[in-house]
Image (tube, rainbow, N blue to C red):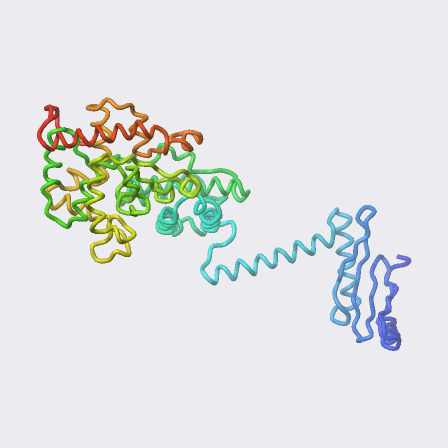
Length: 434
């Protein structure tokens, strides 16, 4: 073909000599876009000039003499064949380089025992870091990771997430179910479902197989926190609490638990900085409340009106612990709050097993008796219990609304408890457990 294969080895050597003598590069043409850029150093760069539409491009084909004239022509011809088929040689070279890099990276990750990109574990850890940890507390995120690491990664972790189908996911969940951990199996399915949804959103898989397992697992047998709700039983409990002879701080915690209706964790973390005895008001920061992470950071505090009886207990307790940070410090050090087992252990010493009454159960006791015996509207009780509501606007106001109504409710509740303890207001009704 005229105008092609114009160079020879002798001609290349002559070009290299001219470049060395001139002290600058000399370009010679082999035809069909192939050139050699001879350098004064004695080496040369092979270049292929080509056009994609009206745009001129250049492709490096290696260096002379490592890349011989014959090899350079072979690379030129292959590149032009690709062009004829619609493939840009530069883009193809970049893709080959990226593919080779990916192979090396995958080999390195495999050698280090790390999950490969596109695998279930890789996507799950990415979801944990980018989504889950941002939404939930650190403890919640740790529990989710532990659940996945123990029961999903061993069987599904190295599998390409796009290849996992409903039967394969179900098989992993069945292993958890087989050891009797029914609730864990459901929680694992929920976590896997969120991982697959993230995978669909990021384009690494096409569907969420967990959606097809809605009725495939055994149902969870819901068990609520044990709570006494028969007035006679509550009255006996109140008398036992009044007669409790344990540590004064523990006795105060027992006394305030049914008056404040906080969750056990919120109660034991209570700080004196939150307490305003003159205004009879407790302000619990949103960071302590049971909420989504974003609501913990930006949500309003939970306001708890203090009945006179609660104020009295706190004033007495202030003489013991008011010089420290925590209202209920640990018995061994004031640098941290009391253990989560303190109130529970006190109940056990009074003869109430975990199937009879729990610290959290006081909330169920109040929820039942305030509605049945005091006739308070559900929305007022729910606001005091700081239960989340369904809509975003409701969540924004639920923690602080009905403050005066809740103040009246808690005063009436404290008076009702006092009458029960003294033996009044006890009407026989079937003994139940909430």
